[in-house]
Image 1 (cartoon, helix red, strand yellow):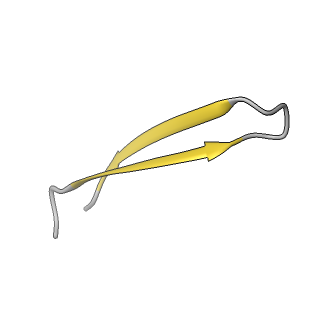
Image 2 (image 1 turned 90 degrees about the horizontal axis):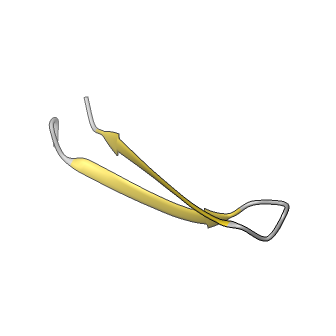
Length: 25
């Protein structure tokens, strides 16, 4: 739904855990 926040977590190529948050438009 528009306005929802989605959080994505992944491991980058250095082995670090990254989290990114985006708002659905």
